[in-house]
Image (cartoon, rainbow, N blue to C red):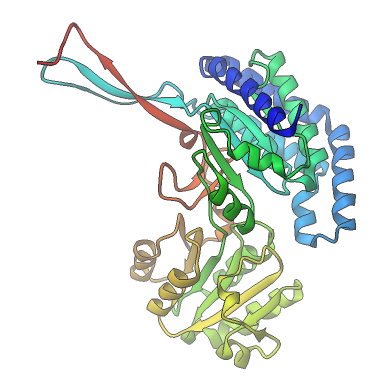
Length: 418
């Protein structure tokens, strides 16, 4: 059987499972999720051994330390995956929720109810925890899932998916509801994107190149996020101690994530007092600073930022810094170079904060908080399926409700159209 046929057969099996999964009760789904969480913990040694193969290959391939960090599993991260699944158990099941119901003049009742999307394809890179997060979210929302992780994590992803599917099936979920394309052949992605009429939706999670490729080749609906060019603007009326804490966290807590800060904007009235302290601290943490001329005058160790740097998603310990003359200049910079992902302001001014919330058009905007908080766990959604920067269907961090659609339900008593 060729690769195209393999991908199609795997998808058709998941599609069949989707129909039965959509009808399962919350009780059965929660039982399966609990079993999946327990299964991950019980299989920790096996998962760590498979992950070690991927990490060793990544080091030999010369991947950056940030990317290797995203790839690495340890007991703490495996437990975190399990904890994330248990959090989802505690969340309300969105399937079957009546969104609205109204009575028409002819006494016919018309409403809408939440239903699963069907079979969702997830295409992602590097982080094995995505396998567990997305599988659990799809199951709780009644969707079957077809996973295709990056080749750099193939051993980790295949092992995790196997553990999850075995546990779910034993708990009453149709076999194949959690499926994975376990081939490193990149052509499998193209075959997956061509599954029109089988895959109901594709959600990619990865870098700019992956997003561009999927948008160009997909024949199925895609819900995606653009690259994460995230900004923090330190206003002239900022609490500088708070600003320092927020900026350091936004850049170095996990620099390889899409919600890490890539550009720091500082009002000129605060720059002289703020930049030496925060940039010295960031430099101590091995962050390479690339700044505008005013930044370099204040902090001579900074390199010169090029025009292309301002729109770059580094996913690494590199930071752009620009001194701006006004709120408007900061907002204009974010509008020009940002990706409408996650942007923050640090200010004590209520009016300036309100302007930022109104005028900065990103999927999440923050006042006096780190952009790293743009996350399903932090927002109380449980694990997230991803962060959408598109405007159709869902925007921002996507949890259970964003993995459902609605259908109309009509309750009549013999009404006909006149």
